[in-house]
Length: 328
Image (cartoon, rainbow, N blue to C red; front, side, top):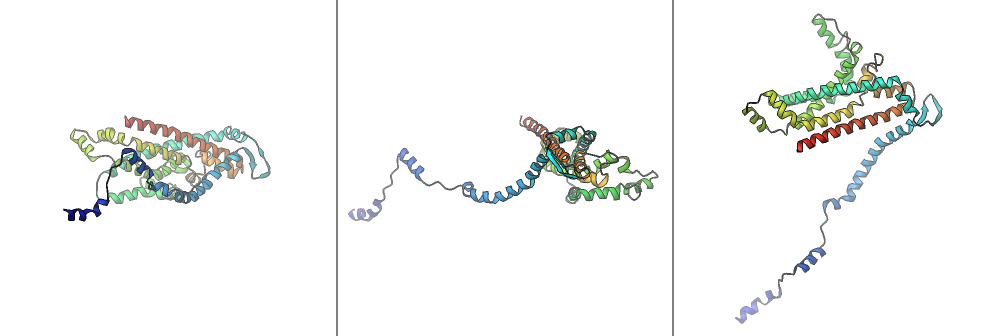
């Protein structure tokens, strides 16, 4: 027995006791806390994001601040010595100009018409390409490809290869059918611009809508078919409500970009015939480069930014209402 006690004596030196709750809390609070990933990467992240944020601020905010500054100045390139603060005179001159009212109406007509065409056609194409059929991947690629064409290039293609009254494809089709060719850009200028811009932005609407449609469960559609729903009822009561939030995002993004359409108008009609296709961005170009009046052109740019923000706020509120309705 003494030999057994002598053999376990070295192990009896380690005594394990359970500390009270107060001592246990003290022990845990005194332990060094592990560094989290966010705290460990804080300085490094700041050094990485700093140059990018600086470039972004210089690239976007400095031109905007200069536009605000020149909108309150008398600055004409033909008379560089006649400078000075004029207050709201540039804005008053812009708003009272009859061309401004016409250009604002044309801008709203262009944006509204393109939105209607792109959202409707993009939704139908998204539903079509949601179905499974041979060659679907290739067909999707071909449909999306117009969105990657430069606006000037697409405008030149439509002007010279499709809508030309003599050498265009539409003229050839009209002659083949025995009809008189139509000079689209001269007789229907705004409709031509709407077609060109819609052709560019339909792939964008279709791509976002198709992305939102991927989250729709096929079991839900199959259950609707079992219950006796036809294709129109599935589209009306299942697909469209499911895509309400996605369509709101599409409308918001397209509205912001469509308010700045310029290249298509400059390449095809140059704002004409007369003022038929003169929009607010093209009017800013005319004031700045034809009239050489940088002050009024800057006032128009500031007004365009305000208009875009107002439209964005309206659409964001619409999206918020849709989100609240979906949650309920």
